[in-house]
Amino acid sequence: MKITRTETAILRIPEDDPLADMPEEAGRLRPIVTVRIQTDNGLEGIGITLYGGALTGTLRHAIDELGALLIGEDPLRIEAILRKLRAAAGDNCGSGIYTLAQSAIDVALWDIKGKALEQPLWQLLGGARDRVNTYASGSLRRGLTDAQAATAARRLVDKGFVEMKTQMALPGNPSPAEEVRRARVVRDAIGPDIKLMCDINQRWRVEQAIDIGHRVADVGLFWLEDVTTHDDYEGLARVNDALSTPIAGGEYVWGIVPFRHMIEARSVDYVMIDLCRVGGVTQWMKVAGMAEAFNLPVVSHVVPEMHLHLIAAVPNGLTVEYMPWMLKLYEETPVIDRGQLILPAKPGLGLKFDERVVAKYRVS
Image 1 (cartoon, one colour):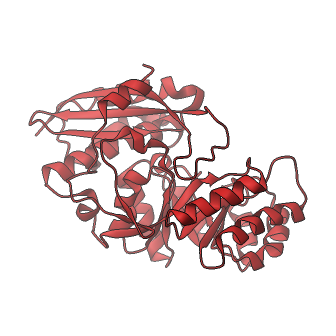
Image 2 (image 1 turned 90 degrees about the horizontal axis):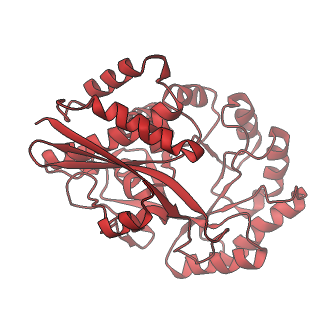
């Protein structure tokens, strides 16, 4: 089997909130790049990547240039292909646009491999479990009013979610008491038994994180996420050591080496791995193994339709972030049952682009 063709497209996907119908900013769009890799025996693998921002066109061009190097290669020899791409990119490989481009290609190659071997990706990679916990994300964002946040939280509970994520680091430089008030509003709306995570998105200084973290301890957060700058490993470790609430982090980390520094510094209790920024399925699995060696669970960041395979595959997979912005792109997506995602039985990713939807959001 040989690769015969690659094809990319840029789409702009609405950042709506299908879970609670409470978007933070109506009409906001997120640009993504899709890739299709085709083979001489008729198999096609698909992948997506994001975070290109104003450089999304550059990201697409990078995938096209790397994709040209795939022609004639055996898609099952993924590590050999990645070695070829790194050598061709030279000093440009390692992070940024190159890593985002590699991610899309790597995901599509694993999709092909699953289809060729007639196994769903989660089973091919290890198959630790056939359903995984998931938490609602994207509905309880910091731009909402307290009343909107409470309404959205209750809607998530009504839909059967037993885990969900809110945000602090509210707009307008609020006091610590105002920050904690928002967390209590959400907790009061959902009751004591729901697992409640809270994302800071790197917006606090270390001393702020420690101060507010102590004040919010009785809210019973399952974790505080990205409390300060992602690569301040010592600062994160100071926060982690000071607080009883577990710390999650890693979504902003590029490649696999920084995860070693984060883990060795004991910066986090939950290692969050982003499929696009880490470099694809191949690199994601290596970080998961690294975390397992330190007895740490791993969690995912966005793209639940792909991440559920990875969380289900490894023994230390904990929960999948269910942020469903991109689910509209596919004809069928995984089902949620009692707060868990059911793993698909179809080979590869088990996903197929809905061509009408792709055409609707395609810009080039």
